[in-house]
Image 1 (cartoon, rainbow, N blue to C red):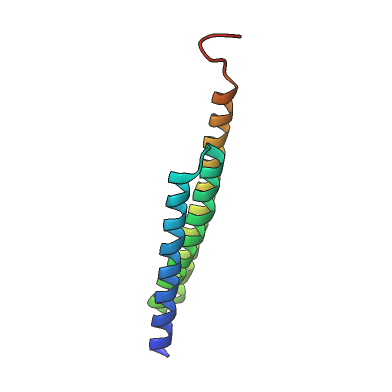
Image 2 (tube, rainbow, N blue to C red):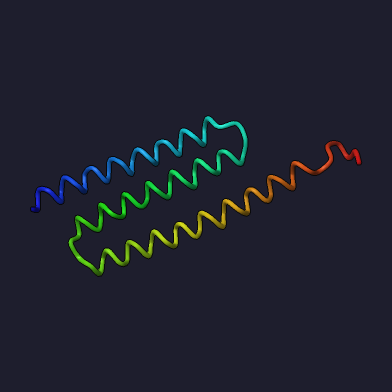
Length: 102
């Protein structure tokens, strides 16, 4: 059973790394701020979920699993708030006149 859990944890870590890589590629390749934010918040949060799940499996402790879930939820909240603030700022900067023109 231990080998099965270790193998599952390895698969979860690999999936988490894949989603982190996909979010980074999206950050570098997508054309505008909003699509970049979408790639980062979705892919990185899913990647963090997979990494936290793998760590919870490897720890084999309910206490550690609950703490990792709390870490993931706080990171999810922080990503949502920061993405909202960045998108709002980008929208405001796009609506400002260029070179002082009204």
